[in-house]
Length: 108
Image 1 (cartoon, rainbow, N blue to C red):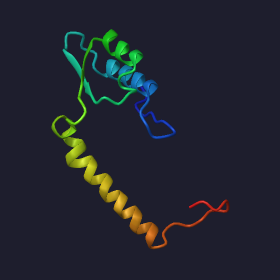
Image 2 (cartoon, one colour):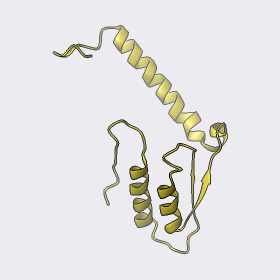
Image 3 (cartoon, rainbow, N blue to C red):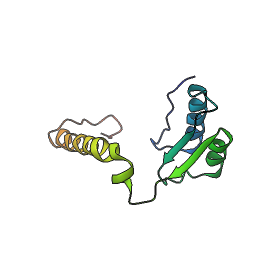
Image 4 (cartoon, rainbow, N blue to C red):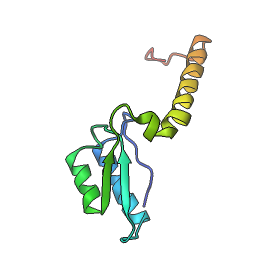
């Protein structure tokens, strides 16, 4: 199964979540295995159709409450946040040093 999905605006949505569930079901074909999906409270993760599809496929669900990212999502804190901060800083330096050019329509 194709394992690359994207949304034009860069945000996760319910359809991509459902594609991900299909992918997991295909990749983890062990009915006796206890499966748990832990995710944050982003609204598309909590959409009823997504929760229903997880349950129909034998996944137990757990939602991380707001304010617990540093405890329950260590990669977001230790890797993703510093990466995004550094990328943002480098982008600002690139823009400030004239790295961006305007296209014919006048956009950078």
